[in-house]
Length: 91
Image 1: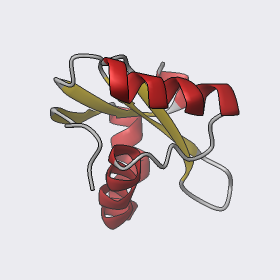
Image 2 (image 1 turned 45 degrees about the vertical axis):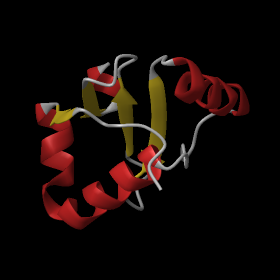
Image 3 (image 1 turned 180 degrees about the vertical axis):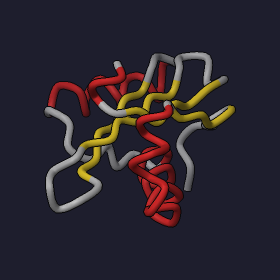
């Protein structure tokens, strides 16, 4: 069950390039993010995300998307208008 709306979902060009071969994974990652599975974040960030869901702050998740360890971040803005998929280097 979704904990919050994603708003408009967008991605950086680098994230799109990485996810081109993983379209099904993209859907799964967005569902994980929206359901409170924050992926590979520090405990403090996970706690901040729980607070963010309840108090309308920005929510950040991080997931490993391939065996080489490539990470993708998913960030939902505080007003829930936009969710962005990006690589850490894009931040």
